[in-house]
Amino acid sequence: MGRNLPRRITVSLNDHVHQLLIERSLAEGRSVSNLAAFIIESHLE
Image (cartoon, rainbow, N blue to C red; front, side, top):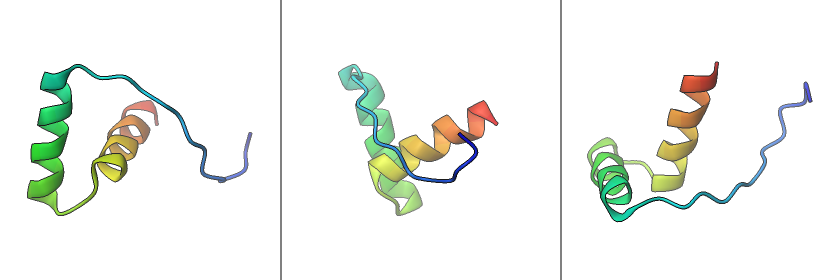
């Protein structure tokens, strides 16, 4: 901990949530994985 190294995780989502992530990522011009990481990080900090 304390190091800013990227880590990979696997998350299972239902179809509806996945579709919402796809739509938002397209609207924001970013990848789904980047958006998911942003949402997770911003809600934990």
